Image (tube, rainbow, N blue to C red; front, side, top):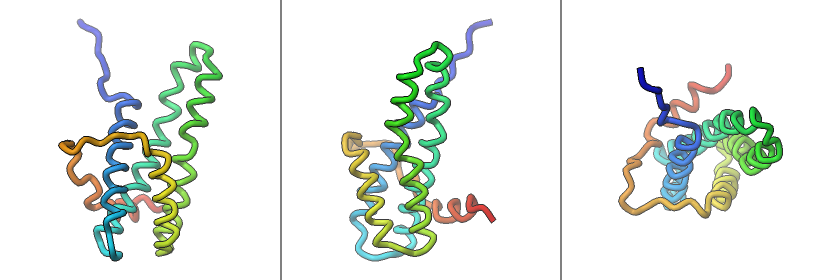
Length: 140
């Protein structure tokens, strides 16, 4: 029997999520008023950042097994902002504090300024329905 290769690793997922976040940020910045799509966009950014933060530990696991502690710690520090900004944006979004959502979105955009999303991407609109998912994931 042949070796099983996992093509869905954390790095690939993180790359797809960062591109989707950049796309959602572009759409969010085009919004002139707060409506259902605006809520979906902001909620998607929150959920995507939380998913990115969840991939960090699985990414550094292999480095830690080999004793590359500095590399693992540096990687964690490079991505620590995702958890912080997702919490800030979640709180602002659920409180209806749209100026704070805009500030946090600008901070996320600054962190992801080097991520390139081609004009002919295949991402679609992954943010549709994110507002409902955000409320489902809200602890009671």
